[in-house]
Image (cartoon, rainbow, N blue to C red; front, side):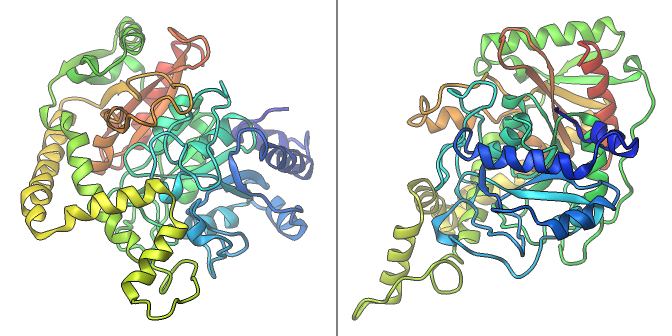
Length: 468
């Protein structure tokens, strides 16, 4: 039987099912998956009975949870899908992991990911690519795609991931599930291997919007160990009809980079929203349209800095020293041995952004453009409640078909990157099946800081138009 988090809790509270039976079933599914979708890196050989007994009596009654493999877990390996950290077991849990355990989630295991979150289609893990559960010949897209695949394939009820610009929203759209990225600073990132500190955000991959709110409210808690963590209230969804919302649609949602079928499906959604008497206006966001270019200046510099620690001395697997080998030669040999091509390529290319002449030529300019984006988006949001767009400019492609076209894959993030650069909340959610009979069309909403509740309410109204 398939459950959502909400329905699972309802069945448990009515004594219609026993958590042990459900957890055992999902544990078996996760084990079985290792030879099909390749969504999991690590699932324990045996169910932890002590942990299960403790979780059953807590609020979430041992609800099965998957963790992206960049969350520190003291009882499971954390490898970031890299041979550099093969077999590494951290001495502590990430704050988000501790909160999940304390609330009664049962952690099934660690989901696969692009190595150190560096990849464009879910094909660059040292443990092999994952497949889209809706069509195993297609990509599930980006670094958290394994977590999305695990939820979509019903191997767990909820999965946690990290989103730096698109990492979870794109896979959620490709797999037909919900990703909710809260306001920057809402959820502690302590104990999570960062990709780009100023852009990373923890969020939830769930089957429904109600499940997302339940899980996020468990994770929203101030943490002094994360210098960017901020105190805030829990998410509350306003009780308002769709007709009371003002919705802005960026004009670049219809540019040449958007596939014809996506454009057609999005226009269909807009027509139905207007028929529900909601106000929908097209707006110009020229600075936001440059988000991809800004992102690929700011993010690389942070990534290169974060990866410097993995040198086989401070962190990472070591190799035997060669006679008369210099420190530089040793570090080069370690990285060449343990990093896969995509990570090495990005470190080499992106380190160039930290050169003093490029700091002034590109980095400072990109920072100024980021501030312009924040001003522009906040100005639009003074007149509108949300900004609506497609999540992705195209439907999933065949595995391996774009491996030699990284530029096109990066341009596909035009709708998701602005939320990270402006530190605002965003949601990707499935709407319905239109041009594609296999993959649902997914919309993307962005709104005011600390106002995830409005995003959820608008998303629910749009889904109700199509009986999802």
